[in-house]
Length: 247
Ligand SMILES: Nc1ncnc2c1ncn2[C@@H]1O[C@H](COP(=O)(O)OP(=O)(O)OP(=O)(O)O)[C@@H](O)[C@H]1O
Ligand SMILES: [Mg+2]
Image 1: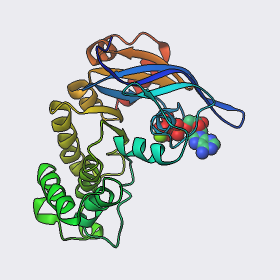
Image 2: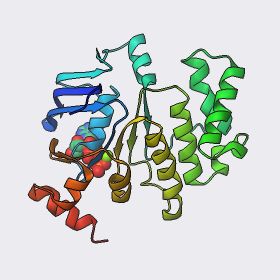
Image 3: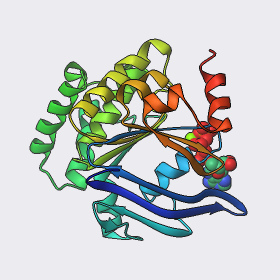
């Protein structure tokens, strides 16, 4: 079990109308831990991430971040959102702002940094994701892999306690997937707490401390990658693995 819990979910339930999408989900993510979430389409992976970031309200249960319950709304919610960064499949960069401006914006607005401080920090982070020379370009002038690395730099710019990734490489051409995964591996090595929804099993094997397998809104398995990939227990996981490892 995690020694120092950062994200804790207890008996979380979530519905979309009649549809029960998170079913008594309990989960502890320790500080510095990398948890990869996999499972079939519709199993609730994105909803789980969105619930952790309060982009989706939950019906019952509790979610705490660093010992504090998630606020319902208002200013403390905005603060919470800035403490948990999120990176989506679609990069969601501002098209009419430069790379540097994209990474700086939240720092000025939410973190109240001066433009100069924000710019300095942005350049550091762009350097960290290998894009030091792209600061003055616009998103459309970058490849998908580069845009996703800007999105990661932007999330890091808020100094988040944790990062959530929802299929960060699914929209990328194959040759760009690795440059994004490599940045994520480096973050993991640097001790960032990460929850990563991905179909990249190589990443799960090499970077995850734990693999969660979800099906029908439930966490069906919560194992080390080694255990999960060599000896999945549930039929659902066996079936899922046989399908995705075939191609
Ligand atoms: N805004 C919404 N309104 C109604 N139903 C929704 C909404 N968002 C998701 N759902 C439903 O909730 C269930 C879980 O969806 P979710 O997006 O969390 O699955 P997922 O595991 O991320 O799937 P995928 O692998 O396709 O991304 C699905 O049945 C989905 O159709
Ligand atoms: Mg999803």
